[in-house]
Length: 318
Image 1: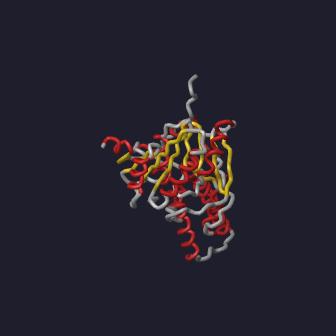
Image 2 (image 1 turned 180 degrees about the vertical axis):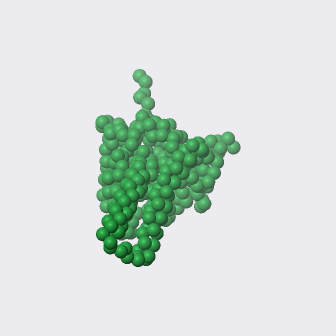
Image 3 (image 1 turned 90 degrees about the horizontal axis):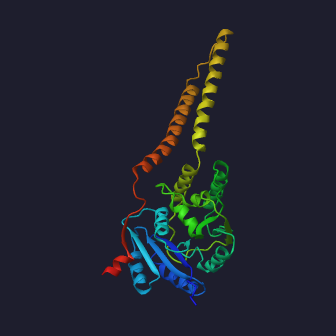
């Protein structure tokens, strides 16, 4: 009687300067793997790290055949690292998680059971609380999700993490979206599929420091807006139309005052303020348009999303 082949779960782990956290992550994932009724492959993507991340990945790959790694030629960003990991994954199910243990590997067995036996294509995670996070960052994060829910047709879940487990068909759908400017949280929602959400309390990093400054997060949020909403263009168009109406009303008022013999006041200061306001608004609208055009420009170049300099296959050849 033939033995039923076990499912293969691929775990994609983006790494940027995570040399301190990797030993803790490996120990934790190795423990969790024992409780999984499935085979495991762990694909660590070194996103051009400047510390000993690559060195430690080489050692792990030599000592454990389940460990695979890709090392980029430079820092391409987490979005590129996730896409590269998904492209390299061979599993029937694929998970994405961070190496700093803010995404608890202990949830994997529960996630696997829900996808394997349930009616779900993916199990995603979200934080119930933002304890330990700076108040300003928490406020801005909540404001961002509220704004996106109003200006985009793609629904983003507040507190959602990149940590999720997906069936192969969902992974293939994500890989079919080969855009250069990526916002994976939005792509997860855009492709659809049935998703179960797991909530857990916020967890601090096990080691190292966060790579996401406030300004990087702000820039990242704008990426989402530009990629999944055209409302900024609508706002600029409406602003231009509204100013045209106001200017027509102003001209009519001046004409009526002249016909009634009422002299116009000499308001040079107010006139200068109006001119500066209208000029600034025009530049602002042109800037919004430029952002969308720049993304179109980058897409037409068809540049690769990432470039791999080294992988575990290079070790095998030596």
